Amino acid sequence: MLTFYAREEDWMALPKADRDAGIAEIGQWFAEHARAGKIVEGRRLGRGTKTVRLGRVRKKDLPMVSDGPFAETKETVGSYAIVEVKDEEEAVAIAKRWPAGGLVEIRPVAE
Image (tube, rainbow, N blue to C red):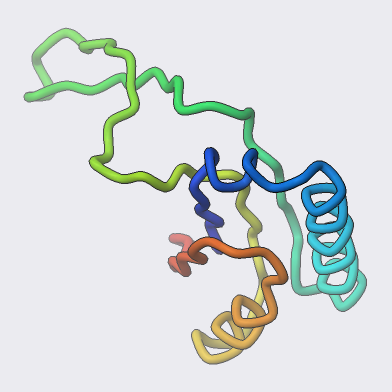
């Protein structure tokens, strides 16, 4: 799974024409890898850092619900892609071609 992080305030500070061009490049990147059969799912996440988290300290405890953001980070997750690749090297190669700025995180998905 590829997860794409960016600083929302940096993105929103770009001129609208630059953001539109970036969105077009991202769309082309997704389309190229989907046509190649590498991306099997991908979504853009809602804007903003408002998050709801549900968690428990112990299994017997009642769930706790709290508002976020939770991670001590300036970047937020903007989108993700589930990729089908033969190995980590292929995932890295696809991630390196990500046309936008920010950070791309690569994680295996449990079978």
